[in-house]
Length: 318
Image (cartoon, rainbow, N blue to C red; front, side, top):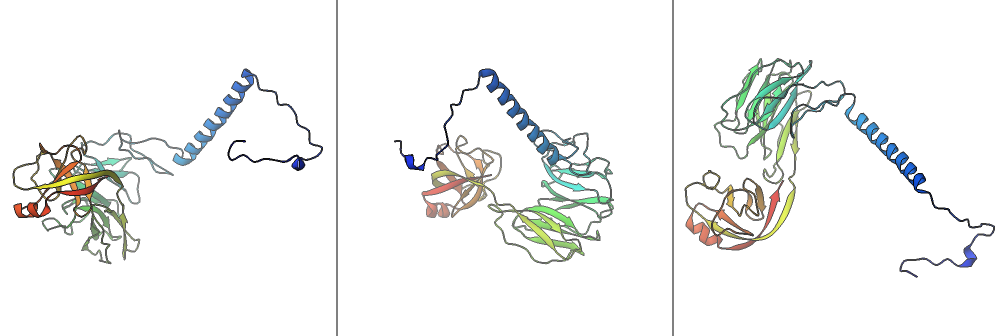
């Protein structure tokens, strides 16, 4: 008896129950049954998809960028112009349509939204967009704290020019249209106009960054959205240290925000988390950096001597 089988004694058999021989189906019968089953599966799937997306299934944009409408929301028919990644979406209050913002500062008006303009020549990527309550304009926020106003949205200040602990990732307007909040990836909140400060979270901008802020209907509070990043373990690496000036393999200046890697193991531009060291961006390479090895930049030779060579766990962040 195969392992896991259960033996049934003749005493457990039910009297009066006779066995019958089951005749196998013909090939034609089998094909017919399979066809009916497949048709039922397809019909069910289409019904589910129809309920999920509603009457409209149009998708705005190309590639990974897109806007899917639900309920009575309409969708634009022309793709937005600009080369930057789509970073924010804001509906027109009390009207039809929406605005789409890209990292390069281009803002497009879709589905009947009024055109109000774009920001050009940004020093830092655009990260947030908030519509004025009357639908007559919007605010565009940039990672360096800059705020750009369009239409009747008033300029009430910005966080540009200051020493930010983390980049600005979102903006939200007060119900009056006379104030707004900016939020950083570390959870820090900046208030302008009649926006009141009600507190903030302390979050790791590299591992669990805050990604958005939304105000309450009465303007007396707000929510911060925290989005922990997925960590992919890459294994144990040998970490060494280097110092000095110049430029990295990607054209940036060396800093404690970057790390030298083997691009065949960790693609340039990727962010990695190293316990005890933090989050760093793969921006440099080195002749001796091959395989499971990374090179940490520190500002002084003494710090590199102190660091030495260590075995560290490396995680790729997504």
